[in-house]
Length: 454
Ligand code: ASP
Image 1 (cartoon, rainbow, N blue to C red):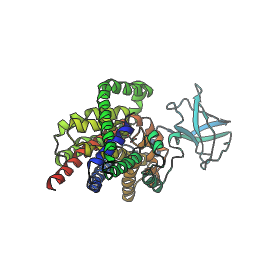
Image 2: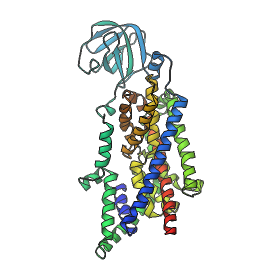
Image 3: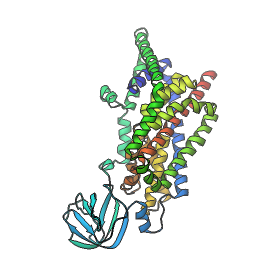
């Protein structure tokens, strides 16, 4: 409710306060340099950690399939009838869902995505349809021997393949709104920022005519910040309810717990990486470049961080982040209104770190050795995928397709990490917002110094 009016009012006011529109260049370049440096640092932390911990490494193909949650039944005889396959083996390792497919290794890898599993003694798996590796529908022979159950591509990422060029183009083209109201309706932050920058800048050049309009925006901005303060009163209850609801959806601790344990090494690597970046790297930057007391600044930003965790959306958190860094920590409104909305869409340290860790983890569970050139490509595309991800829940999961494709890794791997993504999403969003908040302090200090020396 507050994101669109807040961005528009605060950006327009912020820019009109700069007085001379040419001064935007200084704050703009400092902000971009900060974004780039911290995102690069976070990806480096992620890549180093995942190579050290090796959460997806296994020695044999069988172990690797097991790591992916599937199973190899190299000698098991089976019968096929229509879409149903009956296995001559007592029971399966686990219950499979549509994230998995049956692959008939003795029949040119004919495959089918699991629809349901029945049968008490001998398992019967019904697949959605049989197809060959090229996706053409085909009916397998009635009997055979040797199959495996492995990850399938899930709906969520199907057809989402986009090349690096397309993502870049989308980011650039996305800057200019073709329809302002459509951008508002879709909560597209970048086009709104560009429009507000233009509007604020132009208003300052109109002299007497522009002044009352600027005043309206100033009033609007103050009113929205008041609403944010009111909203914060309900935050603790809202945050608790959001998290409880999401955990319930994931099957509660008994449903989600086992998945978390199964993927524990991977989730642990992401969380440790995020912690290193959020608790060591960013605080150091905050201390030395932002000249803030780290403890106080963190406490002041806590409401925004907990909201980021509970909503999994940097964009939805913007109003709170703004309130915390300005009223709480004394960052100037002018800097905050420039750095925070922009940061919420393009500065995602947590997402970039996660994209790199997840891509390399997927390479490990498929037994694919990555060359150092490929590591560099992952570094670059993870950064780009984070810039391209919108500040909404699980946006990073989908943009990860471009990282995987850039180094030819199987997209199916995403299905495995999908189950715990809602949780990791919250962790990385918290770091994304923390990165923006630290950025506001750093840019403010650098800008402040400039003003003093001018
Ligand atoms: N949910 C994240 C954010 O809003 C984006 C992502 O990594 O999915 O910052």
